[in-house]
Length: 297
Image 1 (cartoon, one colour):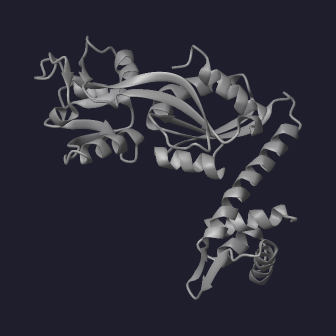
Image 2: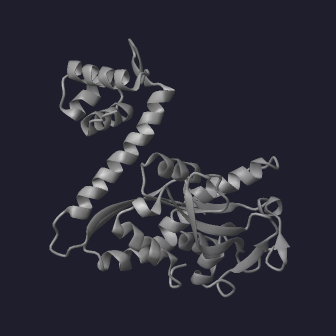
Image 3: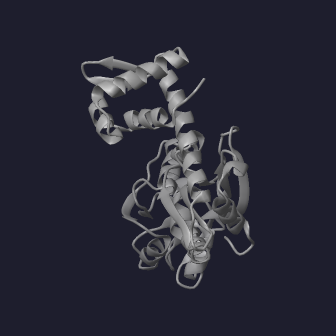
């Protein structure tokens, strides 16, 4: 089989566009030329890639498989270009990272600040995603690197452990729960919760745990950082569940109280997810080494 990179890029455009017409515009081709190229791809693969009707097109299961491979191939082509791009500093590249809430808001900004200051030719696209979307992104080549916490069922991916944290309950001084050795989440949700913003991995995780026991998360306010949650807790607005490292950094046990959660899921193993570490550009492998360093959380 012979694949034209332009055809693979075109197929990605079709998958990401609302119609063939929009995909044709993105690819700077006529609609007729797009149809001819897709038909040639289908003939070469001896399978249907798109369902066509009056409402537009829909990708078939075979088309989804091709899309996954096409994205991986085009990401590798981008890496190839960057690796050989002439830069005055001799160090260039682009890294896309899908990460959970804690990584995006807590430790990755410091790690990336140090990394990028030493790699002036590198650019980074850091996006907060839910765990399932992180796994899917690494699998289909949408992202180079994923950062997750907790168990992940993805045997096709390489997982690299780099740190361990635990989730704790933070309450204001004088709160009825502050002297408890351990508290069940079901008991904690009797009080108003201060949480991260809608769409964060931690909020989704807590909701999942509560749904299993037939309860809901009583959110009073949603914020965009763990420091903001701690300040709200300190003011007596409510309670919150955050990583222990964030609570300690804010000054737990002096400005607020940390209570252990009596749950089997509180220990959070932080992992990097990659399809194939050897296929990553050099700058991405260097970033992985920096995340794994003892100085990283």
